[in-house]
Length: 197
Image (cartoon, rainbow, N blue to C red):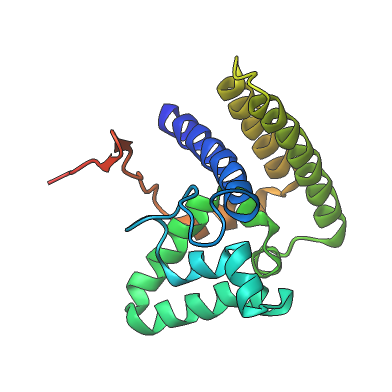
């Protein structure tokens, strides 16, 4: 449970850095040829991450429709490399990493037989949570970092409880089978991956 809390906090901070970093890259000195956040050798250098950058999208004149298709295309390509067993486990790990956000996916909702009324309730919960998170980040960006971690953890826990509270017992059981055995993500220490060898 403690690792889950640390993971949520790190995810929230990463999102905050991404927001601040994207502003630096698109608006200021980190623009064309500059060294803003996330630029540099070995940092976020995979093609999908590159194609998600606002400046790259603009340069390529990438449409919203094209951007929406990219993750599915990448996943299909991954499926051509991995075995069926590897792909099944990868999907479980992907769902675990996405956590509650996985339930925003239309395909997953269909697999779980989530009704329209359930979708409406879930979407309201997600919207309220996003609004609160945005307010927390606005406070943090203004220099008010006191208690941000605890507030983010509390908000994520509350959102998860509310969203899963919308599911029926059968849907919860099916989702638990979909995510499989818990995968423990390695924690980075001092900017480097922790070696488990």
